[in-house]
Structure formats: C-alpha cells, structure tokens
Image (tube, rainbow, N blue to C red; front, top):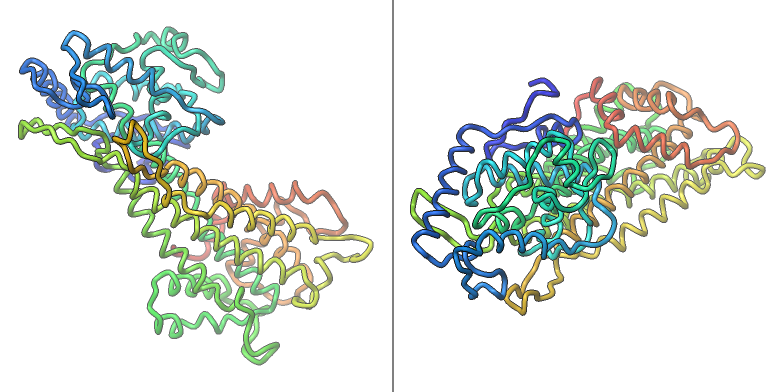
Length: 510
C-alpha cells in the first residue's frame, strides 16, 4: 500500500500504521460498502423504534440523571442538537491537530461498526472534514473519561452543525465559514445521532495511539543510545549473554539483551569481566532488565489500545438484526486509564535509568573521562548542565506518574458515580513521553561526546548512531548554548530518523 493511498474504514481493522498514515501522513479515508450498509440498517432501526413509540435511552429520553425524562417525538432532533451544544464545556489549551485528527478518525471507525444508529451521511460528512483537513479546535481539559470524553467530543462535533471554530489549512476560522467554502450544509441531527457522536473514548484513545507510536520509537532509541554509553564507559556486554536472560524468561529482557549485542557487534571499545572491572553499575548491567520490563509493559498497552481503536464505545448500542437495544457502559475509559498509567510509568523508568547513565558519562570519578566531557574543564563547563536538565525532567516525570486512574468523582447527580479519569492519564502519559525523549536525547549527546575521547572500533549499530548525530551536532570543542544541541538530538529521536538509520543496519525488536 502506498503512503498516500486511501484508508478504507470497516470498524474493525484499523491498525497503528494506518492511524499514523491518516493522522501524520494526511492520507484520506473512506467507508467500506459493508460499513455503509450496517450504518443504514442501524439508522432505519432507530426510526422504527420511534414509530413504535418505544422508550429508548438517548433516542427519546434525557441524558445522565435525566434518563427518565421522556422526550416527545417532535423534539428528538432538538434534543440531539442541544446535547452537542450543552456538552461543549471544555477548557484549557487546545489539543494538537494530530490528536484531533486521531479523534475524528477513531470516531468514524467506531461508528462504521454499525451499532450506533447513525446515518451514513452523518459519518460521511465527518470523513469529508477530516479529508479536507478541517480540524475542530478542541480544549484539552474537561473529560472525566466516562461517559467517555463527552466535552472534547462535543467540541469535535460542533463544526458538523456549523458551530465552533476550526483550523483549516493552518488558519483559524469559524466552522460555518469553512462549511460554506467547501459547499457543505450544516447537519440537522436525527434521533440518537448526537449521543452517538460524543459518547465514547476517542480523545484518550487518540492520545494513547500517539503514545504507543512514540513509545515504540523511544524504546528502540533507548537501546541504541545505551549501547553507545556502554562503549563510552568501556562497559561489559557479557551481562547481555543470552543464557543469562533465557534463564529468567521475560521476553522484553531477552529482546533487549539481544538488541545490545547486535548493536555492539564488532566493537573494540567494550571490555571483558575483570579487564577494567569485575562488573558494571546497575545502569549498565541491568539495561536488559529495565528496558525489557518497559517493553513488556508497552506490548500489553499496545494490545489494549488496538482493541479500543476498533471498539464500539457509545451507549446504548443498536443490534438491528436481533431487534435489540442494549444499554451498558462501553464508554467507560477504565481499560485505557489503567493502560495509560502503566505506559507512563514504563516510559518514566526509561528516562530514569538514562539520566543515571548520563551522570556516569559526565562525572570524571565514574567515567575516567574529562570532567563534564570538556576539553577545557574548569574554564569551560562542557555538558555539566545537560545532566541538570535531564534530572529536572526525570523528577517532573516522577510527579506525573501518580496514577489518575485511581481517582473518581461522581457526576450527573450521582448517576455517573464512578469515572475513569482516563483522559488525564493519557495526557500525562504523553507529557512523560515527551520529557523522556529529551532525557534520552541528552544521553545521546553525552555518549556521542564521550566517544570522542575513546579510540578503537565501534559496534556496527553504535557507529551508525554516532555518525548520524555528528551530521546535526558537531563535537563540543568549546562551550556553546546547549538547548540547540538538545533540540537537534531530540528531533532525531522523535522523527524516527535514529531508529530508521540504525535498523537499516541492525535488526532490532521491541
């Protein structure tokens, strides 16, 4: 499949590669014929319920605590419009456009399952806005994570009604104006449609899909950079012996040890036990155990997020083929909330051990290298403050790791008396990943500089990583502003360029 090929949504087959292609690559989306048929049948069934005068939550009743208030048939359209408008109560900084694109994509995919009672034309309009890069401005705060991400999704859906503001091709505009420019008419929602549009977990799921993609890059980069540090500190890769790790049996640990040995293959800068020291400090010797545990956590979280990306998460769900409407709690964000907190802790630990390796690189007592990797230490401070910055980010991560998923505040007059706080967990997870990328970038810089003082052949993978760094950051000859170096190294991580360059030479696993 080419990068710009249209992604066809079925409701059950969306993966991380297609998510990335749509969200970052701006590939267009379309709905499968089967999905359109399922949505049409589901929508007709909702109209059937109204004609039979059956009382169904969200179709002809109020919402939340107002679920026992019956709405007359002539007011069902107004009910759905009022729902979107009244729930657009978000606050805080707007979500990044990529996160909003992910929300739109995931909501379209969820509705394509055909369990929501939404007309195909309604979902098609959302797809058209996504394809035209019309991105609603969605505040980042205000979701309890059950009944889903109500406030953020309401903001996301306002433009369908010609309301709210959007970013279109990089320009902030009123939604009504953009619809006119595109020749689109604002929707008049039918029964159940408003509730189906906003009752779900797509904000936290979009954040976590982004987190999974970024975390994978981070985990591979951590192995690459730590291998550079092992060379710079003349470490002992014998601690990566496969028999040692097979004896314990954890997949992530086994994979990490294998990655390190591949990266260091051919290196004359590492040592044998007893050559320089009997064994290394934990931040080198236990890289497989620490990185490996985070890899195991990552794989578990990826499985949870992938399931949620293809889930029906609104309420009630329509099963037209069985003449049944089932009210439940698929909107509850607990699976994602727990997964977000878990991944946050796993990524925080990657940064934690990275900062300890950076300290060993810049501390002459531990490294045997010039103080703070400066050729003129004393007169110049070299990379002294790099470690300060890494320590600050690691400490911030520790504060952010307090799990949001253990909290709950009742809402809707105690009808909704347990909520997940999953959106808070997901937002914190993304902040931790961003911080951790910068911590690893600092280790990358320090390891690269430390290698300037070592002689001998590097490993096949570490040599590739060092040469890539030197393309954008020259060796430190004299003191200079460090923030530009950190930014350049960070971009090599976040763009995927580091992982791509090294995995072109060495096959690595997560």
